[in-house]
Image 1 (cartoon, one colour):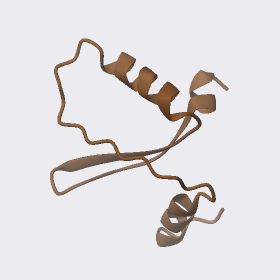
Image 2 (spheres, one colour; image 1 turned 90 degrees about the vertical axis):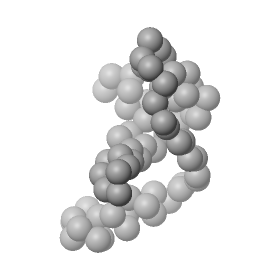
Image 3 (cartoon, rainbow, N blue to C red; image 1 turned 45 degrees about the horizontal axis):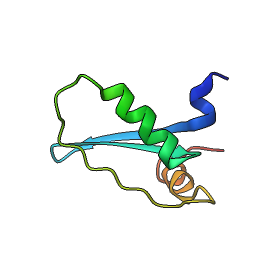
Image 4 (cartoon, helix red, strand yellow; image 1 turned 120 degrees about the vertical axis):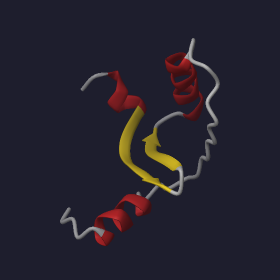
Length: 72
C-alpha cells in the first residue's frame, strides 16, 4: 500500500449537470486538505466546493453497490 491508501480511499466519481463529483473516504480531514492543496499548488483557482460528512458504516458506498447491483 502506498501512502495514499492510509489517507484516503477513492470511492467513486460522477459527472452530470455541469458538475464533476468525487467521493473519498478519508482518515484525517486536515491531512487530506493539506495534501489536496499541495496537489493544486500552482494551478489557477478552480470553482471547487468541498463537503465533509461522517459515514462510519460506509452506507453511501453500500447504497452505490446496491444501486448498481454490485456483489460485495
